[in-house]
Length: 259
Image 1 (cartoon, helix red, strand yellow):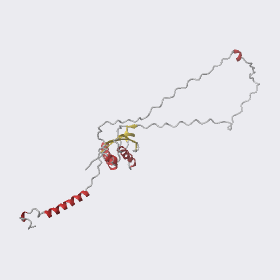
Image 2 (cartoon, rainbow, N blue to C red; image 1 turned 45 degrees about the vertical axis):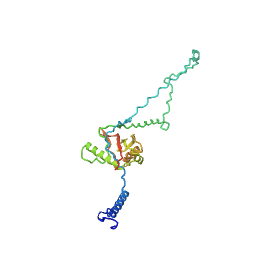
Image 3 (cartoon, rainbow, N blue to C red; image 1 turned 90 degrees about the vertical axis):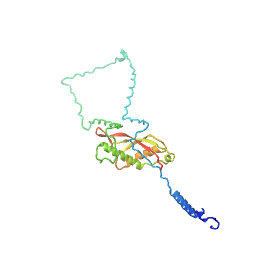
Image 4 (cartoon, rainbow, N blue to C red; image 1 turned 180 degrees about the horizontal axis):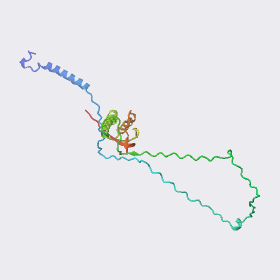
């Protein structure tokens, strides 16, 4: 090398081996980092269910009790045939029997009725079973239903309601699973479900009021039905101090987050 270069002190190739080794090290480091790099799954975000909905949701209020059907009309009067008879037809031979009674007439009393011959009157028919009245479903009551887990919290009903809303959000965030079809197609939006909180705290009549498709509505219904398997039930709503059935509307937001 010294014989080839006229000026060895300014040889530009003397640092080539060092640069070559440094390049190999950096290349291997980038390859290892590329193999170790993983993408995080999209994070599900469920907001507080009391957020305002952009569009108005038309909720059909169930009928508390249907009016009984009108009674059927009375049947038409039957036509009776009137038979007229003449005076000659009505006249018959009548024989008169002397039925006068005096002191010497022997009158026989009718035989007494014995217990064996006495027939007890038939018992009166049983009263018809009382018709079960339709239980009324309220939409707005004085004290709305609360998610369980906050009844021992100190404070008034407003503080317990705020704690119950937080517990409900945590329950949904912990149990919900983003549908695979919705994740692959980037489906996002709000799903609104509606259900009835009974007087015993159970949840029934779950229905989807607004759906964004791709399995999100079915997933929201599944989460609501899981509430019946909890150890504690909902605190029922109250109207004038007594527990009543209340229709509850719950919006759930499905949103994908990519890191």
